Length: 246
Image 1 (tube, rainbow, N blue to C red):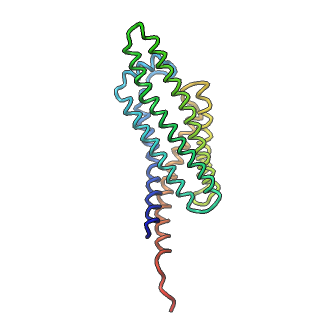
Image 2 (image 1 turned 45 degrees about the vertical axis):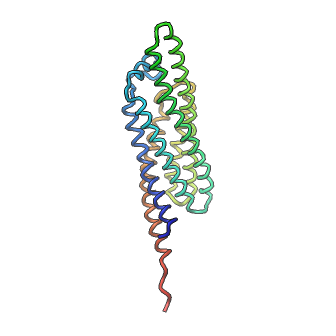
Image 3 (image 1 turned 90 degrees about the vertical axis):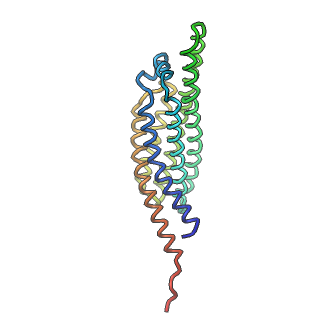
C-alpha cells in the first residue's frame, strides 16, 4: 500500500466517524441547552440565559459539532471525487458551500455563545437607570443571532443539496442516499427563510431537516468506512506485482 492510498483511507474513515459524531454532539449539547422559557419571550429567556453557568461551554460543544460536520464534508468530498465523473464537479461546489457553512455556524456560536451571554449578564446586573439601554443592547445581540442563524441554515441546506446531487449523479454511493441529503437541505433552506419573519422556533421543516440529516449522516458514515476499507484492499491488490506467465 502506497502513502497516498493510506492517506485516502485515513481521510475517508475519519470522515466516516466525524459525520455521525457531529449529530451526536449536536443532539447532546442541544439537550442540555437552557430552554425552559419561550425563545421569543426576551425578558424571561434573558434571565434564564444569565443564570446558566454552562452557557459558554455548551456553545463550545455545539461548535465542536460544527467542526466535526465540516470534517465529514471534507472527507466526503475526497471520497466522491475518486472517480472522474460529473458528480465530482458538483461536489466541488458542495465543498465550497461546506466552507461557507462552517464559517457562518462559527459566527453563530460566537454571537450566541459569547456576545449574547455577556449582553444578558450586563442587563441583569445593570443599575435601574441603565436597565432599558442594557436590555436594548441584549435584544440587538439576539436579533443578530436570528440573522446569522437564518443565513447559516440556508447555507447548510445548500451544502446538503449540492452534496446530495453529487451523490445522486455519481456511482460511488447509492443514489437514493443523495436524495435524502437533498431533501434535508431543502427543509433547512425553508426553515432558514422563515426565521427572519417569525424568529427562533421549532418548525416542521426544521424537524424534517434534522431527522433526514441524522439518517443520512449515520448511513453515510457506515458506507464511507466500508468504502475506505474496500478502496484500501483494491489498491493494495492492484499494486501487488503478478508472477510472470510461464
